[in-house]
Length: 207
Length: 95
Picture (cartoon, chains in turn brown, red):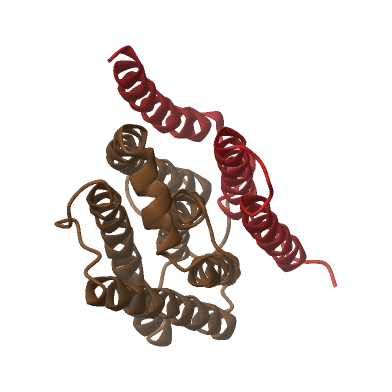
């Protein structure tokens, strides 16, 4: 039996024991995350090529992004990373009340992130800051919207999953490996933002 | 009271990691205002982001405590990322 074996989930075919089942789930999620990394690698390559081509556009465009909102969104995602660790741990230890509370906090913080992002989009669009404005600044907005929209879609998917997990936990049907997999996915979304924050908001910030 | 064993970090370690991640975010933001050159700004920002990502992967994602096969998969993903970025940057540098 694996050293990572834990109580909680019923062992299903074709797994030999809870540790085998848990390790297989983790390996599957990491394989999924590795291909997600390739997807974001393409987007970061797009960023690199455009920034090298038009560095002034990126400095000018970044000045239009409010770094204070960037810090707030980063703090929300980092804190939600901590609460989802607690959720996953609670699921493994079969502590349902703290699982539901931690998932609820994670969901609320993810929603807060999306609300701030939506406010930012409204501000930018209201000021005509779109990919269709003429170069040199247009290239920045093109990259900005592509990267942040794909990231926000990943956040949205995570929130849908967390909402479903809360419902399942309230019905006592949640499996700890499922929570573990969703938590690993959420951390990946967090890591992507850790890089997006300085690359978009802190190129040439204004006090 | 002793905690039952899981691969997850303890609540104390989780909160300490969060504190470190938030402190590194403050440092990243402060350095962006420091009178450094553009290249050093980028190096500092990406270096601190890599440090934060490593903390998340090693502790929050408990990669440090996973089997070697999981490490191999994670490194493969990182390898594809670096391969693609290197190719794009080399192509741009050659123009």
